Amino acid sequence: MVEMTQKISRLDRAAGVFAAVAIVTTGISIPAFAQSTPSQPSQSAPSSLIGQCRAVNKVVSVYKQAAATSPVVSTLKANTQVTLADNGSGGFIGISSPVSGYVQTANLKSCGKPPAPTPTPTPTPTPTPTPGSTCRRVVQPLGLAIRKEASSDSVTVGGAAYLDQVYLTTTPPTVKTGADGRNWVQISKPAAGWVSNGFKGGNSNLIMCP
Image (cartoon, rainbow, N blue to C red):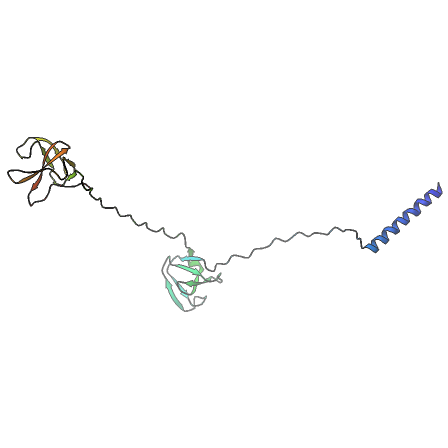
């Protein structure tokens, strides 16, 4: 029993020596756990104001340098838009337009949205009379009586008010001249009959429909 224990002990020592030799000769290393450190949060640089738009909130002076004692190079009206040229310091900020110089930051405001362009009205096309149309419009301010025959003594069968439409029986129209020199035109609507189209050489009571 004692001999067996001694053999096992010798075997364990031999195994330990073999492992040590293997590590030295082969370069095998025992892995080690790397100690990690929490990463520091990155701080983003502040955004630049250069090139941004601002507007002045009142009449302001533009100075040659960033100081109220500096010479004034221009004066801007209220709501004038400016372009920033630096990030500002000490209560002043540089501008590149409409002039180069420095203004006090307390006198600036947001540009806001530009006004919407005024839409250009679309012109209304002028109606063109249809060739060969039998439609006519009454332009006699008092309107026209529609008579059964081409005569002022004939019975009235209807009427057409100012700017009403009437329709000829034919095109060109059927025309008669009365004993008094009045021109009469035959129509079919709004009632069948004759309407006066004025005297020869005078103004017409009818025009083409648009």
